[in-house]
Length: 142
Ligand code: RB5
Image 1 (cartoon, protein in one colour):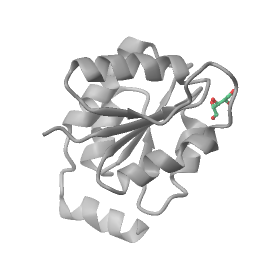
Image 2 (image 1 turned 30 degrees about the horizontal axis):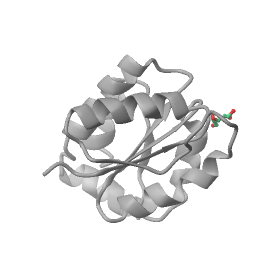
Image 3 (image 1 turned 45 degrees about the horizontal axis):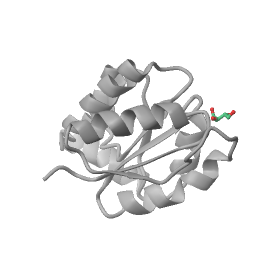
Image 4 (image 1 turned 30 degrees about the vertical axis):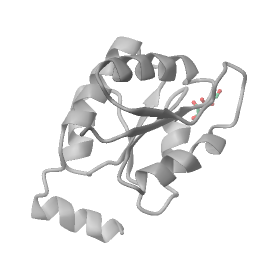
């Protein structure tokens, strides 16, 4: 069974969130939308908690704001969260293999929907390498 995905965005990521939910649902993923539900301006820190709680149950998390920067800064304040801001498939792949990232942050104003779908696909299908040196570094963070 595919790992459920908790997803949220502010107004800067709203359109991309909708496009990703459609694409992911079409691929058989179970997405849970934690807002925002419109283009009206909101504060991105208000949309992080539910996603981080879901990730602590071993779900995947995706957070989107205009640049992805605010979401990644805020999500990394939560214990156990390893949020990675990725702008391409290579950083997405490495964020899983090396950093065991459990939240993917994206910029709705810097990526096309096509680019984002590609990034998300790589991120969701790449496993943590489990190599000792990477685990050791993650243990140091914890
Ligand atoms: C909102 O205008 C914008 O600042 C926000 O989406 C995000 O890019 C912050 O990092």
